[in-house]
Length: 191
Image (cartoon, rainbow, N blue to C red; front, side):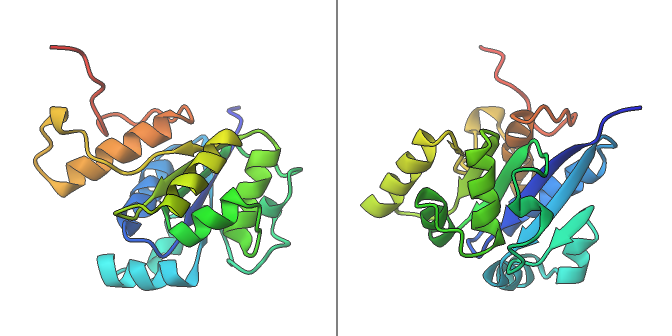
């Protein structure tokens, strides 16, 4: 019997809802992974605006869903074992909350738990240009062991669609957790 691995997916109101959705779609096909989704109210607005997708449609992609205000949820405790957490997309507000240990909702609290338990936290921040506060917050999260992974396309793969660019970023991030999803991205093999 294969041990189920749990991964928390947080989605916020930054642009780029497609990253969180695509991760959930890929993980749904992985029999040995269980997803725990939490999305902010601004994330739900963005989900509808960018992808014309409802909360119900999103929730169907996750194994377990949590309300953003439920700070007593399982993922708010270090005793609940996970492989870590991905925040995709991550707003600058949520980045600041994580950087300063301000667990004002379940997304920032779950991220805080992941950091304190020394598990893997990957944040996909979506903002340009960056001001000094953004950069310092990214530095703080990095110093605490988090990984900052801005969703920037790799042009050497010669992706011919937005979908291919999204798949590349999603594949790379999920690979950090040991998720093997064929065909999402092609590692650099040299010239």
